[in-house]
Amino acid sequence: MPNRGAILRGRGPAVFPSALVDHIVHVHPLVALALYTPVIVITAVASLDQAGPLALTAWAVGGYLTWTLVEYWGHRLVLHFEPEEGWGAWFHHIVHGLHHEYPQDPRRSIMSPLLSIPIVATALLLSMVVLRLPSMYAAGFVFGYLVYDFIHLYLHHSHPKAGPLKWLHELHMRHHFRDDSRGFGVSAPYWDKAFGTSIIRTRRAVQ
Image (cartoon, rainbow, N blue to C red; front, side):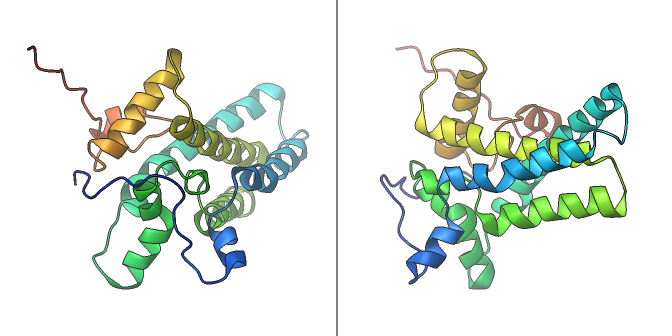
């Protein structure tokens, strides 16, 4: 549904009485880098004797593309599922509602570990233990997540003047300030095109 309510500036309020808990739920951007860079390195190195260079590259690309689909559908179905009341409404407020209310708060521009840790753990379990894929697939998936996180952060706190980042910035700002029921692919807006959720740029009326 279209955006509703005011867009608030500054830092969003704490959501837990404990400052420690609040800083675990909404983290500094460098925390994501510290958490997931070792995962990427370890899974990539572990895969080096599992296949040849071309095959490993293909697995990494496959993992990355899988992430972009998780990004799109997770944003569309999970982060924008908005119950009116109860536990679901509270959870939505914590993991995504505050980000839309305070889009300039950098702690809300990085995915909360409440979501990122289960997503990454599930990807590792399914790909490496259940499906027994080369671990380079998991490396590509987690790399895709980290790229998404920092692209999202950049789009909210910079104003690119040209190139692909300017295009991504424009698309994502439409999601925030025009219609939050469309435009779910932050780092991969081609999925909005594929699934019919692109936000069309409107022309200004000629005076």
